[in-house]
Amino acid sequence: MKKVILLSFCIVLLLAATSYAADKYALGKGNVALKVDYFSFTDDVFDNVDLESGVYVGLEGSLALMPNLYLAAEAGWAGTSNDDDITILGRSRSVDIDVTYVPVELNLKYAAEFSPGWVFGIGAGASYNYFNIDVDIDGESGDEDDWLFGGQVFADLTYKSGAWFFGINGKYQITEDIELGDDDTETNTNANNWRAGVQIGVMF
Image 1: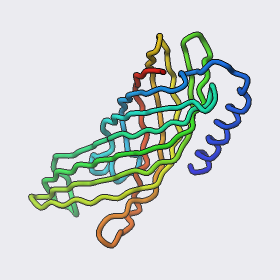
Image 2: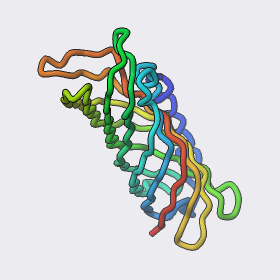
Image 3: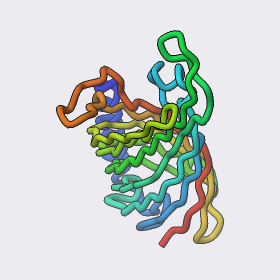
């Protein structure tokens, strides 16, 4: 997957280089967008304890480097939870588990208007992501957290109306393995995830 992200970077830069003659900014000289997405971890560990999916809310700000090339920073919050009985070592136990995930991303995005008002974008970037898990099992509680390096690839489709725009987006993100505890024990579990949803924003 790391090769896919690197290849996506190269494609974005190649597309930008071949469109240097454009004189119309695809999404303004800059823009800000609010995103609301369905969010899902892909590691089987989250699926096994019913923590695989939740809601993501993010805020993205972009600045045009060229008419079709944008540098974008995004930060958001995703949460999943399980308040149910699960089987641990053959025994049913009452659990309350909450996972908080906060991605902080820096991306390059190529955006091109292919029809009046319609803009297609693709991109890739690097990220530093906060992961926290809060667990209560049969009344005994504890929490652990970690910061994870990662990378992502994404695409979106946007419709412009005046200074406003709205559309749909999809993203896949990979991260390094999670380390928990005072001794930073590696769990062999990652926070890889995908997101899909909608965004609304304003250009300036």
